[in-house]
Amino acid sequence: MAQERNLRLVRADETAGPHVRLGDIQLRNRLVTSSSILGYGVANSKLIPYGMSPISQFVPLDRFGAITTRTVTVEPREGHFTTRDVWPLRELPGLLRRYGRALQRVDGGWLNAFGWCNVGIDSYLRDYYPRTRGQNTIISVGGFSTEEFVTLVDKINSSVPSGEIAAVEFNVSCHNVNFDFNAIIESVLAEAVPRSNHPVILKLSPDYDYLQHARLAARHGVSALTAINTVKGLRLDPETGNPLLANGFGGLSGRAIKPVGLRVVSELRDAGVTLPIIATGGIRDFDDCREYFWAGADAVSLGSAGWFASYPGYLLSPLYALRIRGLLRRIENYRPPRR
Image (cartoon, rainbow, N blue to C red; front, side, top):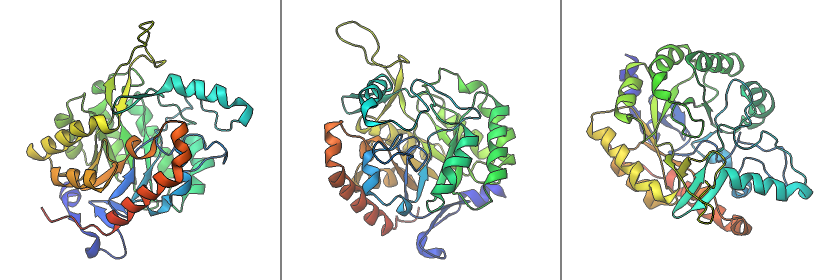
């Protein structure tokens, strides 16, 4: 019965109010934001909005279908960056150097290895979540064992009433933490999903067996899929041969992976996967969204292709924000054809 409920996609004009339902998940529209792009949905410093694209200061975040948080873990993690979120102007050069070891611009996209850098679930729920209740939130969580995912779910259950967030996203596919998630994914789904008072989304990686993982998700009551996570990549300094990122390998995002994302969404549908799909990978404008809808996605997620720019390029943040606002308007008025 739960699976049948998840398969039912309700159009916005069939629901009460300006909302879209993907099975158990209620979105404000079909455009969400990707994990990590906007940190925890709010920053502690206005001068340097740690963890958030500067473009976000010119975009009304509460208008998105949902804002996905950076992946949070049971305990705080420095990862390959830092959990510090207030940087005075005099320390800006040091912050930029740190960013350079965790995020690099590459041809057609971005390579990142933040390594689940986050303040931990307790700090997020205490210090950040209460300030983002005006947004519709997807809380992204990550862990290295079934027990950690169960703990994360329990902590969210105890702090967030049912129906107050859109969903909890299980990140069981990140390459930047150097862990093989294949060993735990089935037990994570079997034990953590039934405990959640909120709908669960499984984030798929194109570098794992995403068809098998999607079938496991349907079997264990997951409400929707995010496709795709970043693609594992590597860049070397041409002068020294050393990796550009502190972790060596990183996750490739941006325009370069859009054909991969479209392929994965299409293959999921061709394989008979009927769970709702939130597609991400290289989305920047309405035509990108429409391609993903044609491929079989039910919603789309705006990531690095929409929010990232070169450091000098961020001076144009108000102009980039106008493009995102325009995309929001088109998505709010879009009604995909029934399938």
